Image (cartoon, rainbow, N blue to C red):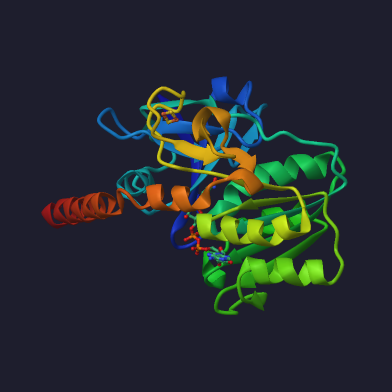
Length: 282
Ligand code: NAD
Ligand code: FES
C-alpha cells in the first residue's frame, strides 16, 4: 500500500498528490512516470512524476479529473492509501549540454514539464518558460515554474491572464524577436505539440515532446502505447515518453487518443451517478 501524505487543489480540475513511495524515489529521474491503481479492481493509469524528494521518500503526481479513475483518485484524501503503484517507468529525459532552453507547457501538460526544467535550472541552464491555459483559473504550477525560470511568460486563450492567445503565439513572438534556444521542450495537448513542432522544425530548433498514449502494462508487453517515430513503431512506455518532436507521427497519435472517448465518458457518468446515490443514502 502507498500512503497519500498530502493532497491539494491546483485549480478547479487539477489536483496534486504527494505519495510515500520509497522504492520509486531511490531511482526516479525527470521524465519518468508511474502507473497506479486506486483499488484492487481499478484500471492502471500512467502519471508523470511531477516532483520527488529522495530524503522524504515522496513523489508528487499532478492529474486532471477527466475520467473514471482520476475521479476515484480525487475522492481520496491524505491518510488514505493506493493499492499499488509501479515505477519509475520509461526513459529519463536525456539532458544534453544545452545553455539555453525554452520550456512550453499547455494546460495540465505543464506538470510533466516542471521536473525537466527544474533539473536543467539546477545545472545552470538558462530557462525561458511559456505556460498556457484556456483561462487564468486553469493555469498549472505557475509559481513553481517562476522559481526555476529566468523568464516566465503566461498566455491564456481568453486573455484573462498574461497575453491573449496560444502558447505558439508567444513562441513565434520570441523567435521573431531574435531569441535563440538550443532546445525547445514542449508538453501539452497533442495538437499543441504538433503546432510547436511545425514552427521549430522550419527553423531547425531541436524539440522534445512527451507522449502520453493509453497505457496498460507500462513494460512494453501489450503494445497499447504504440506510437510511430520516424516511421518505426515504438512504445511510449519503454522507449519514451519523451521523443524527438520532428520524428513523431502526431496525426496517428491524435486518432488513437480518440478511440475510447465514448467509453470513458460513459464510465465518468456512471461514477458520478454512484457518488450521488451514496450521498443521497446518507
Ligand atoms: P488545453 O486543451 O486547455 O490546452 C492548453 C493550452 O495548450 C492552450 O491554452 C493553448 O495555449 C495550447 N494549445 C492547445 N491546443 C493548441 C493548438 N492547436 N495549437 C497551439 N496551441 C494549443 O489543455 P488541457 O485541457 O489542460 O489538456 C491537457 C492535455 O495535455 C491533454 O490532452 C493531455 O493528454 C495532455 N497531457 C500530456 C502529457 C504528456 O506527458 N504529454 C501529460 C499530461 C497531459
Ligand atoms: Fe503496454 Fe506500453 S503500455 S506496451
